[in-house]
Structures are given as C-alpha cells and as structure tokens.
Image (cartoon, rainbow, N blue to C red; front, side):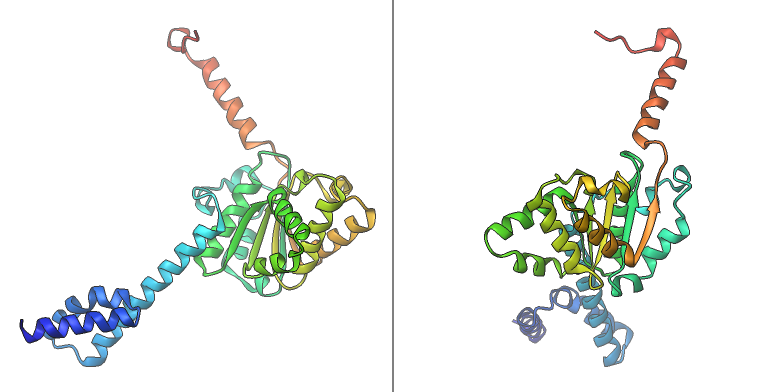
Length: 267
C-alpha cells in the first residue's frame, strides 16, 4: 500500500470523525488540483472550508424548508400581482427581502374572500424567508388550535408554545374557520398573546375584523386579539374576484367558443 493511499485513508478517517463530509468528498480532488496548479496552503484550506460551509448552508435551508410545510409551487415568481391590484408588489418584496420586521415581532395580515390568492402569497413570502435563512411554519389555523388544545388537556401548553418559539414566522392560514368555541379560541388567543412583540405571525382570513366576533367567544377577547395583531402589522387587502372563479369562467368561455365538432362528447 502506497504512502499516498495511507495518507488519504487517514485523512478520510479524521474528516469523518470531525463530521466534515463535504471536505472528505472533495479533499483528494482539490489536493490534486492544488499540487498541479501550485496553490499556496492557505488557498487549499480556504477552498475546502468554503465548500463545506456552502453545503452546510444548503442542507440547513433544505431542512428548514421541509419543516416549514409550505406548498412547493407557491412562490413569488408565480404569483399574479396584476390580478390583485390592491396589493403592492414593492411592499411584498420589501417584506421578503428586509427582515427587520421579524426582529421586531411584527405581523402580516391578509384579508379577502376565498380563492383570491391569500395562501399563495403568504406561502411565497414564507419561501423567500426560508431562502434568507429564517425558520417558518405554515399551518391551517384550525390545525394549530387542535394541537394547542390537546397540549392544554395534557397540561403541557407552555411547553408547546415554547416549541413554536423556534420559528421566526408562524403562518396561520384561514383563521375564519376556527370554531366559535371557548376552549379553541382561548388557546388561539394565548398563542397570539405569547408571540406579541416577540415573534411574528402571518394570518390569512376571509372575514374582516368586524366579523371576528364569530371566531372569539368574548368581545373583550376579540378586541384584545385584534389589538395585538394590528399593533405592529402590515395589512394586505385582497378584495378581488376569486382566482378559481375566474379560471372556471375562462374555461367555460373557451368551451363556448369551440366549434361544435371539436367539443368533447360527454357520455
């Protein structure tokens, strides 16, 4: 066995022990390139470390994207801002690219009827933040309420709320569908109060604040929840015709304009 082979084997063992998989994978090829091109030692070391750090960051973002539960195809690049003229693309891009609002625990609230793209837009914002190294969790509001309600029954609600603290942004989709029930809305309020001015929330709702009395049982709780959410918030109004309705109407119109001989035969 040659000395070079022994050296390579020892290096592999050491890099495995140090948990440097990228350096282990690239070490021999970069060392060969270094010998061939006459690199100084610091350049070889710098190249190995740069590759290791870059792949670690890629793996970290991949993990965070997987845990975020975001729809993979709902990105800013595929959102039709022209269809929602009430929403400023510049404002949304500022939220995606500038993260000072997350440091302040500020919120984003999206209002509009079903089908106008609220979930798409908030998911797209979540993807942009994951790309920037932030931790995000997307959940239906009813699902997180059920989770917190179960935690309360098992006397571990504080621990469950603490677990959610690791997320820079918690996205609550479809708040309007939470049942008007004392136990459900009280844990939702506790979540809102717990994150107030510390951690950010993004909330989508089909109904305006004036109808949130249908979600929270007590008027005082409704007012307190709205106050905490709005205090530091960007509000996006999306009161336009449903994407889904427009798509359905477009399909129907296309069928009406087809020559009779080309229409599909329905059995």
